[in-house]
Amino acid sequence: MKLSDFDYNLPKELIAQYPSNVRDASRLLVLDRKNESIVHKKFSQILEYFNPADLLVLNNTKVLPARVFGIREKTGAKIEFLLIKKEGGTFSVMAKPAKKFQIGENIVFGENNGALYAKIVDKNKIVFERGNPDEIYKLGTMPLPPYIKRKNEELDFERYQTVFAEKNGSIAAPTAGLHFTKELLEKIRDKGVESVYVTLHVGTGTFKPVKVEDVAKHKMEPEYFAVNGETMEKIAQAKKNGGRIFAVGTTSCRVIETMAELPIVHDLSPVTHSGFTNLFIYPGYIFKAVDCLLTNFHLPKTTLFMLVCAFCAAGASTSGGAGMELIKRAYQEAIEEKYRFYSYGDAMLIV
Image 1 (cartoon, rainbow, N blue to C red):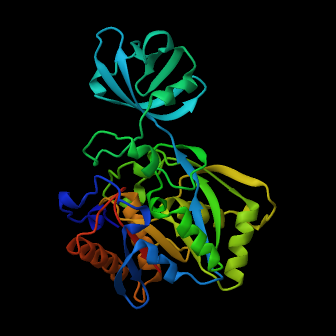
Image 2: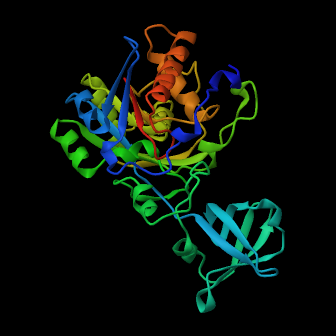
Image 3: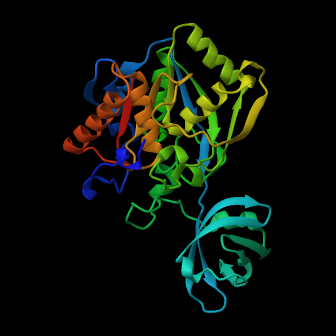
């Protein structure tokens, strides 16, 4: 398939700059693939779509305050860093503005006696030479995506994090999970639907732009995931009992499908299985475990949008190109109905 197949036009005013006032008060577009219907709900009404035998799979990754500002010791100019990956005192980073990123230069973070000093040692790496590198996150803010055109605010520390976040490691939120409240999760449990957790730390792989016209040639950057055998056993049991697997977000979906492709899925011990996945899901992919997908609305020409297109096409009453047309019709209707798009936007449930 061609990259241009995954393009669409979105008015800029529909890109959400703030979250909804209440998490589960956001809107929910429900797309039924079999009868090709679209209905509009409040997110709290997602409760209507669960059956007692179903299983809800959530990504419990926690977003690190990975956006930090340092001062060039030589010039005093400010430089922004996104801390992508930590290995001891060495961090893989993205710098802004990139032209100020000069190898061998010293960067100061913080002030006075508590200052941390790092040296730029490579095009995308800094090494802390003075101070505890773990302290750097105390100086950071939440790494909001670049299409949110405002400064970070205090509310972002809470709202750019799911209520079930537990495992530190992401540089972006698993945004489909942002709509859940603890009260809504309790109501889902009261309906007989169990929730289980997987971990996928969102890194550059999720957001790496596709630069080839033939999407099959795109290579995903590996991202860390973890899931225990008990969770896989519950997924298998739910399927056996006729329940559906609800994946919350593309990240949970990729973890489940990664495990479904491995022989180790048959090991139902409580041991945690972890590793790195570079699973790239685009139309033509055969889903092995996920039955329903909850997701936000994604940027055009991204691997996230391609995954959603693949899921829609896989379960549509008419497959292939017709399935692609169905997801595009849903997006167009969301635009016409003025849904809020992207990370702080509204949600879509595909059943």
